[in-house]
Image 1 (cartoon, rainbow, N blue to C red):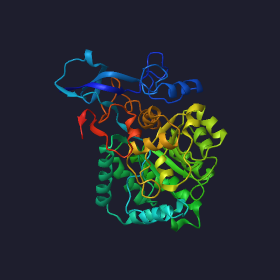
Image 2: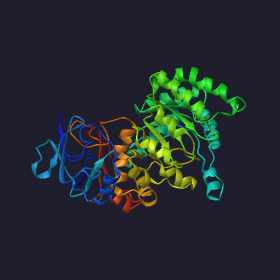
Image 3: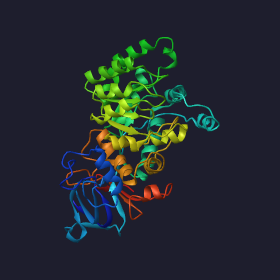
Image 4: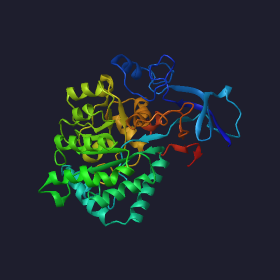
Length: 419
């Protein structure tokens, strides 16, 4: 099998710290105490010390062999390879890891977006219109659209993606959504508990019974994760607990949508159940932040939602300084965040959520990997998957500095150039 060397990298983001950095050797982890967080803000120049959140290397090279990273080091010391790519001083980062998306659906909700921009408030109930369009679509129509969204993401540097169901809300339709998602990613999430469908509006407990029983039976074979929209207008904390515990009993790992529309007890439930991530977190109490900081549960921020719904942006600075592990994801869906662009979400996180460019890039790579409990993506280190992005820019900061500009020059997934 041939080897590939990417050399003359001006700025290489590895997400692997210096030998003094406690994250080294145990996978991506964004948690740090307040002192480290302050050091992160001061040191975004890429010194490679523990204060650098991105483990940056200058004048670097990366050797790829058999779809994996084989060597990382100075360009001056790079080994020979069968093929050489000259980065010409540009930046290389890990492929983005999008740990929250809803890519299998029919129709769109442009009219709803237009109404929101005219002042209408966002509510969870709009999901039902997408359910109707999704149920009416054929497998081939959904499959073609799914692959189109994946191509969009890949072109913008996303090499790992999680995909949720949630727009079928019947046994047969939820089964086909997770089955279609499983064709393109191992990170499939069963979200039968997205909202209560119209046919069960008068008896939501009967729908919870369906989700915990026949629907879970049909979807578990295709899924790695189980999720619930724990929110006013969707599912209560008690219902969410019941659904998550049923999924855990079937061998699925827990995730949770919570505190998007207002404060609630969903974050505490996620931490209690050892969920890999709790997502949104727009309205967090001090107790929520403390619980997250003392746990292994990642808080996944979805700035595309706040952009689209005009809700307040979460304060990522507060979270990072408190020691919370943070991820960034697009939440691609037709209702509240119809973007597939991680660079756009990075720019929003820097501009409106208090993150430094280095923190935002790390959250979109190593943070997403942590939210998926993966240590083979989101990092550039020997043994990791060779998922890399060459930027047409000298530093990762340009992702936020030049918002809306297509800076992704080349993408490698599993060592193969896909763009």
